[in-house]
Length: 92
Image (cartoon, rainbow, N blue to C red):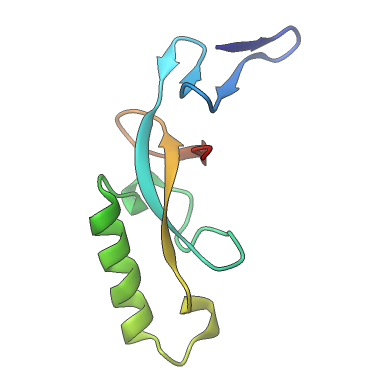
């Protein structure tokens, strides 16, 4: 847990906490440049890497002429519980 003296609880990517809140690991689709393919909302997160990668491959295969759809990959993120909005990437 990280508590900043001025700003209070901060994300601790090593254990997935923000103060007393325990984050959950979810999967998001990232572009080659590291940006998220979808908007920063939990409805675009996936419970498993397999589901995420399958959707990424479907997007790639149906948009072969679009440069921003090439090289999409599943990446694990810490997300808030319940609504699954992403907070930060899980460190490797």
